Image (cartoon, rainbow, N blue to C red; front, side, top):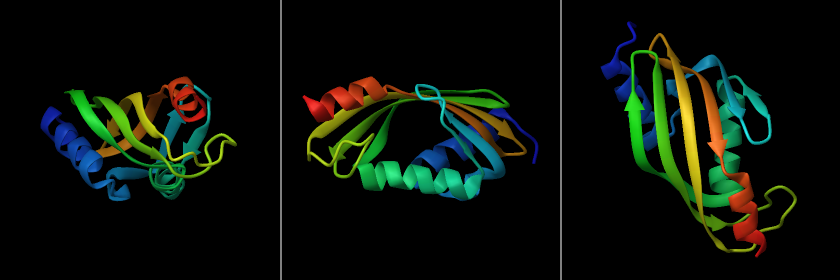
Length: 130
């Protein structure tokens, strides 16, 4: 598949809406910039995101804005939901969360090849501990 602005937009918007790992390359790498944690491979990435959005939290990412180019996409969002499971050693509190998130995606052959995830973990921890 040829990378284009439209293919980048179509793939990323579908991924944000459906969370289907088919939009992620088999050998993709997602990096959590605040912690340096790296997730390698489609399956690992999918498991990690499900554990975060449907384990540690019951939440979703509400899109605030986005920018697309032929090989890159940028998501600005708010993670909105409840703290319903262990996060960073903190047991579920049931507290509401609203956490800023930005992700820079690199595309290759119509799939997400790499993501740099800027989740404001300090904001999340403050919201679930205060």
